[in-house]
Image (cartoon, rainbow, N blue to C red; front, side, top):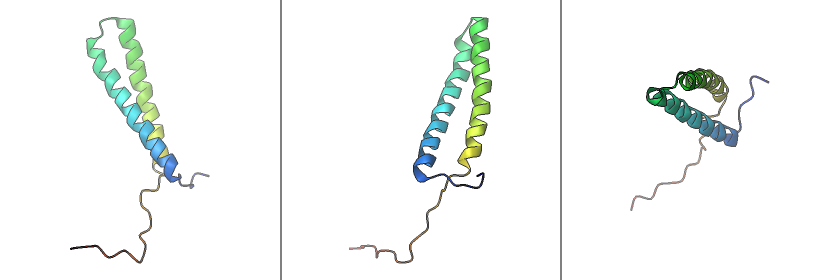
Length: 81
């Protein structure tokens, strides 16, 4: 089961999840500098650590995504004029 490839739509969905999680991670990391409450800062740091771990797991799954599709032998002739 580990050698199965992801379908195209699964790859796209996973790519969107990774982008969103990366954006959330960056926001949590940057907002830590604006927070003065120690409990909230600790919670945000925990979120950063868990997000890094989750991104690592998602990227491992993303390696099964098909990035290339076969090129057909008969390509259409480009229109130059």
